[in-house]
Image 1: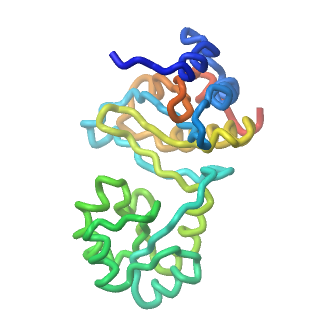
Image 2 (image 1 turned 90 degrees about the vertical axis):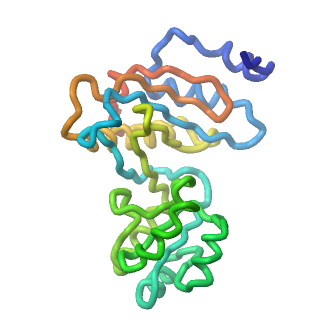
Image 3 (image 1 turned 30 degrees about the vertical axis):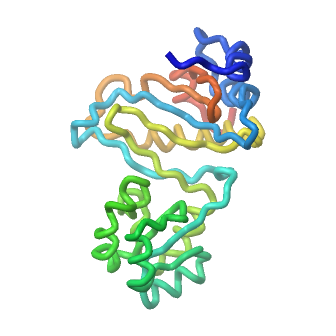
Length: 239
């Protein structure tokens, strides 16, 4: 069994591992128990009452966090002609409009955080699945990252503002960052509330019984904090 270091144990001593914290208490304590030397990410981990093997129990959507993620998001857009021009106007960091750029990505270059594509480019983008897929960078209509040229400025702006994709994984869990430890508790709470609201709205038709079973919040490398699921699913930005 792996042994935890002194700083982790000191942080863990501040946590009641048997307690289900309220959402606001959880994000506040996650900040306090962050001991990393860098500005740690605060993450939410949710155990869903879904069967990921069933097509009608999939969850995949996006949410624009009101206070973003606290980092600069680098956006690459696959587009040509008018789409490439719109991408440049919209503030894209990179535009893959040539075979040279696409070949560069195929060779393993992925120095960007979000990839967006116009529909006419998806045939070429599909060939990059080996590189983009494992890094969760493949543009997808369900995630809103495949859009018409005229929508590119809006989608690019949302991506840079804190647009986050969430999806059910093979173990029936959802993992989503909601900001940095340097954020105020209020900002983290509001991002958390926006995420939960989006997940509730994304409830699939095949969901039965308890939709959200368990929730925990933690800073990078920090101890996990259990969140009361009932309080979490009823929170709102007006509290």
